[in-house]
Amino acid sequence: MNNIIQSLIKEVVRVEVSGKKLINGTVIDSGSDVIVLFNGINYVYIPVDHIQRFGVYDDNEEDIQAPSESPNITALENEKELTFREVLTQAQGIYVEIYVTDGQPLHGYIMSLMNDYFIFYSPIYKTMYISIKHLKWLIPYSQNESPYGMNNQTNLVQSNGQLLANTFKEQVEKFQNSIVVLNIGGDKSHIGKINNVEEQIVEIKGARTNSYYLNLDHIKTLHEV
Picture (cartoon, one colour):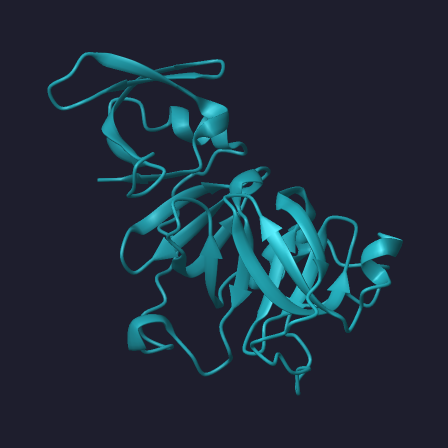
């Protein structure tokens, strides 16, 4: 547990996360690798690895108030502090907003959690495979809220029972000879057929271009076309 962050409990802070995104909120809790803010509406879980800088937000132009209810995701009774993996574990099966890349939050829910990635269902992109190390923040929906006005009971998609790889690299390898979208839409996205995966290098064949190569460490999301 970080004593510096702990000293800011109940303070309103401004946090800059990877991608130059700014989040303002009251510090509610922290663990060894996660900080929990309340932004006046939602609880925001931010992995410490993606925090670029932070400080007390004296202006508080948004007049962020203290929360009236406790967060749904907290440290377990037998655990000394909250971890980001525990956040992901408890978030399985509930609607969440997550931020990974290209200024584009994703809405849906976590279906399964593996060693270094998770399977995410988005009503827009359907089944996605997301590297945990690239997840910048997670916001649980309130209990009676659902994305795009979906019915909570009837629109939860169950796992199709496919055998999942333990690691993100192994899961990417399963998509050899498949057409995929990497890093969702945006300037840094890639659409093509995975021809080969060797160590950290992924060979992609575009629609009418020669093959090109990506570093696996910079692949954040994958979903099949």
